[in-house]
Image (cartoon, rainbow, N blue to C red; front, side, top):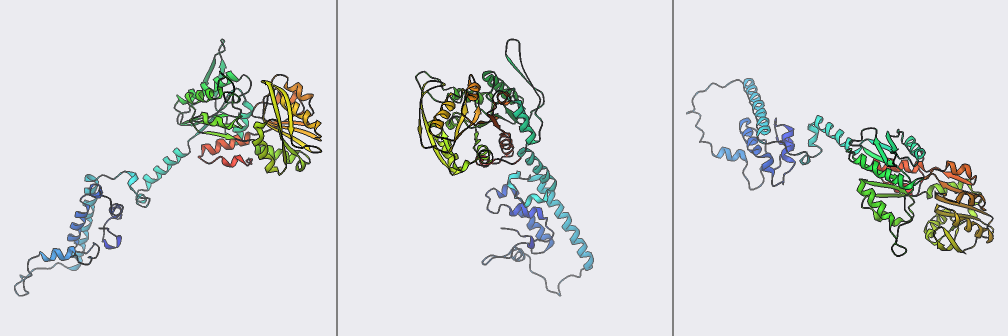
Length: 462
């Protein structure tokens, strides 16, 4: 039986909502046992029809009750009684109703405890404004926990830029080495219940910086942080992603295991050497792309880019190059290279035409720069007017800067996933694109539980 508000006289609205919430629940009598009987007693006391109108083929409770009453005496045989006034009778009825109503609430609160919050509908929760307000605020706190951003020692300038865009301060941490070169990390503020983001790139002393990152992750994890995310703009050991010869290690997989064991809950990186590295992890990995920033730079800084040719220095970068060429609506070309050994190229073959056009080399990283310098010479021989190079990660190790200074490039454009201040002083051809806004927006969206797919094709404005 479903009770409606219109059929009741003086019955508490919260009780009606409790009864009507689960009309078909098999455990209804357990949650609200006895309340129906009390409502019948209330009906009998008030002598008003507060139940639903009787259905066809069924006798109402009022009719059932009257059928059991003794026969009414005739008027002549009735004893004389004193009838109270109508006003006094109404006052007495009202008083009895309020007493019975309060007793009904009292019995319900004692014998039938309130069901769990999950049983209530949103409308029934409206009768508990204080509880609802507290519950909403607690849900908001869980949905938007506090955030701490720590910086490793590999790239403090990038960490500062990211925090400025997030309108945060870099959290305090002491990073130093003992006399025997062991890494010592001390987290300088509480991270209990916080979302922690640790920014550390594969720059400088890569092994030391990787160990420092692992220690920082573990230190925050055992300090009761809510989540720990490692922001690694340039992923270490990314080129050792497959077993290309016998007895070769897959070091990228080892690094992934180390990060997971240290306690990382999330990885944010940029332009992995091979996208399959994401599969080395059992935790979420966001692989961001510098492509939107590169496209913006090409359109704003390279003259006659509408007639340019996008060139890949090897077959592995063909997918990256075709994506950029399609978005710029220009042609693309490919250079096939054969290596004698690591960092040494034996032969190059150009596939495509660059004659009389601006050639734009695009690669994910530039290490010793032997490949891109030989590619520049090949493009000039093929008739290219100007040659530019765009690389996401500018490692520039060994003789790289010397080769670039002697190369035929108009400019070599890299991002600041790795510090470039010293390299730009030594080589005027190096130009840098700031990608801190992409990483900052990725951190903000991850912290707020939003999608980051927007960043795959757009540069955030901040």
